[in-house]
Image (cartoon, rainbow, N blue to C red):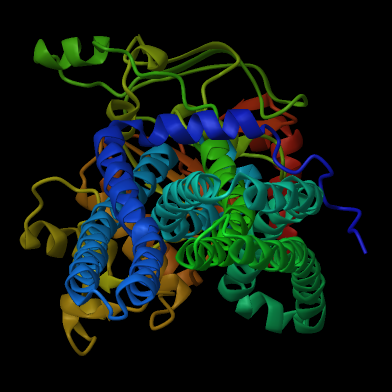
Length: 600
């Protein structure tokens, strides 16, 4: 029955998970202590209930035996104490529940905030390697698992432990011999339960991991419906989902089946003990070793004795789920972050001296690799202020990587990148990115109005600035033709506007920020020829006097570039303007002529 994919070790580090979990909640230790004390008091008050009932029974039988009538004054007094005990326990238990529930909500809030802050500090490379659905599963499912179970588990641990110890102490007080029967049953059942839970924890850990994979598949399938249907891939997509879903079903079934065995196993041994106590206890009452009220109280305690043991046994599986979820969250929170920012940027000093930014960019002997395979090798080029630089080459040549390095999404393994003579590593990342307006091939618009999308990331931008930028790009007429103009709400998937219109809006968004430099990464790949010409005209105006970088596969769009860098396998193999490179009749000419012949 055991799945081969299940990690036989269960949690990677049980002690480590417990330690990290405690460190994450220790700031609320005072609340935890208050909750523990309240739970302890509430439980102790409830524990004395059977003892008082036994005293009432003994009082009634003894008074009838000695006096022939029931001593109602004593019975009423004991009844008053019993009611007061139960009411006090209920009130204190309610207060304790409020404390633990508020603690659970606070902890959930803190975890989600920490995950979100962590996402902002992680390098882009992490998200290239990790499915979005897995990260979402940690933030939603794993946090929910901890939040929902944390308060309840904390209360149950205190309540069950206190109840078990209290019941055992009172049972020993009533009869040591009868208590031994119950005590012997506990370790025997515990041994069996421990073995069962050891197997169960393996499947609980695997269940969390598989759930993350399943969420990743669901997220990819949902966002990629158009591609799936266009390629008739629905059948294989469903099959892939069913495979992971079946794996999750098996792991969940195994985990919950094994954890559910704790209750019947506990009952088997404790019921045997219960039968033994009833027979021996009856004998003790006959010979006068214990009062009838005492045996009544003892049987009630024994009958309830299995409840805290069962709860503690079941809590073990719940704790395994909490720790498995916590381990996934803590592993994410401990992922390697981007290199720390410099405390005081040289770039800020330049700004403070009122020096005008020139936009000079230089790559000096830059080397970079994502994993082991080098992507950029000994890359060097100096770009003068105001130049329009085109980067061309076959797929995988390193064009987009150059832009990623320039924007400090990654830092070079070796070499330097300088802007106006200042190394980018000595600048803050937000300062570097503020210098650039960036338009990518993959458009991204969020659910909201067009005006909100166009102002995204801009600082102190008026509506008039938005209108001016939209006119420059040539999208103002289209926006105003929509039913609500700039207040038109874009749907979550942006499917109420075309791909070309989305690209025009992302370009407008870049224009609005009035950046010192521009980056266009295949920015016109999703628009028609006429729209492309409009964008080219707009960028001719926009990039005038600004350093700009253009990555393009359509070489006809970069013929007016001041400098064309031709890349192959991470190296610049040719550079110059269009005429110079065509006259050289090298690799660029080969690429250009092949596209020209295809266009013809």
